[in-house]
Length: 493
Image 1 (spheres, rainbow, N blue to C red):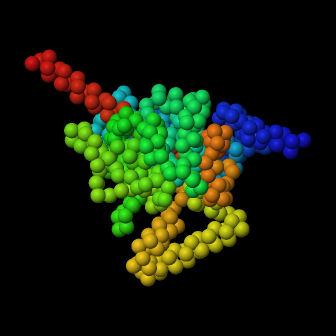
Image 2 (image 1 turned 180 degrees about the vertical axis):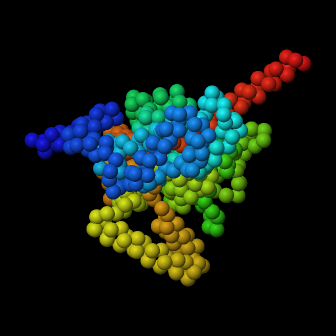
Image 3 (image 1 turned 30 degrees about the vertical axis):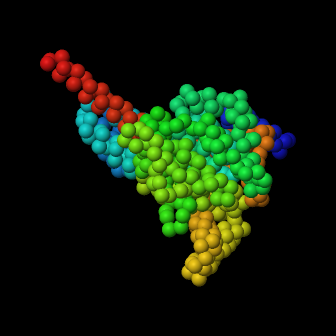
């Protein structure tokens, strides 16, 4: 009977079509198997619960007693996303929904303390001192980023992932995309909140997918017809507005990052965004990142000049599929934005069969499998590098080996990895065109694969989102204050 009840609840989760239904079934499952009791009890070997409980009670006491300087001093001791190991994967795998209540309470207390100190009524600490603290805290705590991998014909999975995060208001403001992932990153980062509400409507998704699937068949390795370049450009133009990275950021507040690889030898890859290439046009960046060698021709990037006119960007160079050199630009995102927490939607057909959802390998055979794969990868890389010099005179072979080294040496996982429920172990299947039904099923699979990670993403990104909001409010306050002063001067004059 218990087994049947378990099966029924797992079936309810598997068949849920909206997050609230999945959440309801997951909570029932946790209650039935006393996992809610596990969540309400501090003790476990999975993290340092004693230190977190002590710090939680100290912060709460300082805030409730309105000891402003004491609270600021305590927060200055450090706000860490993984204090006492509370960010560990195992803490989010025990129950179907959520984690230890102590972790939730601690994170919420940190947010309450930050919001309390940011209020204008807290006058014992100057605005300058507050600004200095919050900027430093934001820099030290870091932030989350969503990375959308190369996708083949699986790019609709990314759309489902983004939709699920957006609906829960936990979509990171830093999003990167390569190849098919760049289409979804650009789609989200070039449309306002109201426009996204329309885009994520199921009927609108069906209509758009219906138009896309007919053209995407040309991107298959088995396409017999020559690819219609102008039709592909028209498809991108229909989905992505004609704007620069800087204009997109000003509109949405989302930092789009698109990876492109050089078409020529001896050039380096680029990560295009509002910081490094503010005047580059997003459309051309997407086209370049989707330019699969042998399927679609290399693309020349375009940018706006000082007069706002379109002109070539680096006219002597052309660019191709970004996933060949930097599928997941984790190090560059860390350097540019202080990213130290990554959410990866991974559908790259070249690597999907070989990656594990988690970074931990506790099972004996998982450890053996992981070690074997790492060792094999290093031997293959070493052999390829040894070949680079002898074949250097052959341009084709040299390019082939360089490409292999670039693909194999990359990192393809992050802190939280969202993978399709059905693994595609056949590369040719992953690159085959999709029917309308298959594309819509991928969108739903992206949503469902995201739901079990929602609470972990919400909890682990809660502090950074609060810090961003506080700093945004401070900026508005400073601007408003300056405007009031200017207005007062004008009146006196």
